[in-house]
Amino acid sequence: MTEIETGIIGGSGFYQMEEVKNSRTIGMTTPFGVPSDQVLTGEFGGKPVAFLARHGRGHRLNPSEVNYRANLYALKSLGVKRIISITAVGSLRESLAPSDLVIPDQYVDLTFKREKTYFENGIVAHVSMAEPTCPDLSGIAFECARDLGLTVHAGGTYVNMEGPQFSSKAESQSYRKMGYDIIGMTQAVEAKLARELEMCFLPLAFVTDYDCWHEEEGPVSVDLVVRTLKQNISNSIALMAAILRRIDKSNCQCADSLKFAIMTDAKHITKDARLRLDLMLNKYLS
Image (cartoon, rainbow, N blue to C red; front, side, top):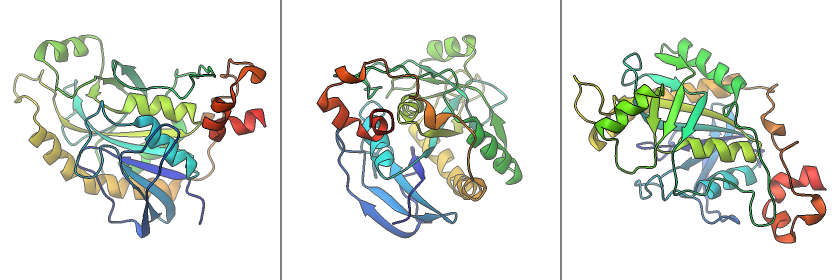
């Protein structure tokens, strides 16, 4: 099988990719448990890809229940080097309107119920999250979106709440005062884990609503989120195909993020930790 270098994670309303050719599904297990669903592999945009529904088909898992570690580890084990993460977000800015695309470059993680690292139980590493997304892929995505006529915004801060409840008005207003641009429930942890796995991370955040701060708009609802996101699925499909056609060799440093991050002396790394993290450690400890 041709090496699969691109993984796609679909969010709310995006549970399958019928456009993938020569497709097959793979049931996977990892040292960190079972992913949200079977992984769909095949060809898309002329490139081999792996697709995974973040919440599972039928949206069975709330944001706190998603096994992010298993999801990204499963994709890494298939050879994936870059992640395209699609998500629905609320806007905290008048200028970021529903149906707009935001490619955030910063995260504020307010979650507290999730497993956020692979480095524990016998090994410690501290990766840099100063620049949590891949600048090369983000630049390509912005140009492709603009060429397709999408309303796209480069950069911005994504505040990741725990959920699954939506914000109160007081919370929404406080996030605006803190200078955050969009709000969601999933991507920050994915960005952290992708960095630990030395994978490029490209977030595509589609605005579905104005959260609940906007005086002229009604409060956010599931119906509004899903309806707006479904209208953008065709845009996201076209955009990802365009991105894949443009992807070539990258000059980013994402693939070397562990180079100076592992703190534990090699002789003190437990056998279990070596086996569990062989995908990442092999090039440094072999």
